[in-house]
Amino acid sequence: MSNGVRPSTPRGNVMTQTSTPTAIHTAHPAFQASERLAGHLQQLLVDLTDLHLQGKQAHWNVVGKNFRDLHLVLDEVVDAARDFSDDVAERMRAVYVTPDARAKSVAEQSSLAAFPADEVNTGDCVDLIVAALYGVAGTGRRIHDEVDEEDPTSADMIHAILERLEQLAWMIDAENRVANSSMPRSWRE
Image (cartoon, rainbow, N blue to C red; front, side):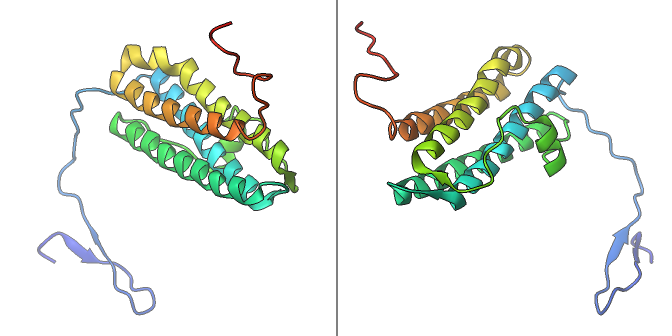
């Protein structure tokens, strides 16, 4: 064919086409992530992906008092974690890093404690998911300054992630708190 496109082998009734490259494309990015920045973003990506999976595990297996409210708020956690993991992965691609959130990678690299496989009572579920939220926030806070030194744009993204995850942690944690006798303590003391 004269247009550089040749038909490939048909599979079933579908005919696909592949193109033959005529020139090599070379990108000239204004910025490329260092290995350190790539590692920090990768850690945040796997922790967010694990949070998403833990949120679904909790959502499916939580039982007990206030089940419905917790069941629904867990969907907010899942949505936030999924959206933020996509943001982080796309940022990684924008700075020429290949994200890796395969199941094996998440299992090997996540800094979060494992979530139980069985049913979980609502009170325990609150504590577990809040710990996971603060775990991811801890990763964001730990890597923030080094990310900011190299790439303020990625650091801005981390700000948004921290704001939402810490808000969710506070709201969910309130379910188990006892007024004036558990954290947080009054700043007036």
